[in-house]
Picture 1 (tube, one colour):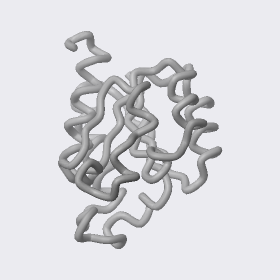
Picture 2: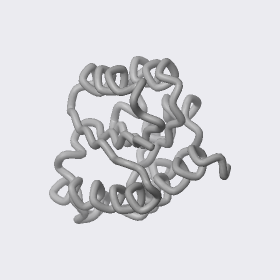
Picture 3: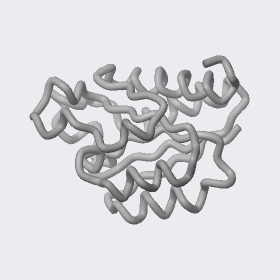
Length: 146
């Protein structure tokens, strides 16, 4: 079972950027947490981060036939990218959207996700733990438990 963990713009700065909102957890910490969950359940994890919308879309397209599911934190593109939303829909892989902060308790423009309609679920506001919750959800779906 191959899981893609996709990170959008500015997530490479986790641990440094606005710790009051995002905490001190780094991207490598999150990737290690998710890898532990996926590996424990017999899968493999492939991680990717880009600050460029097209690169994220290219990555999803490139791996659509080898991956079984996707975990994605698209950062600010969550609220603006029709193209990324369409890419998620086009690859036809179960996808879980995840966010460190509770986007619904933040600025109004963050309340709306363009991605959620093409995802099987959304985990938001649980901080670092949200990624492992999202991974467990995705793996349950892939294993037919949900």
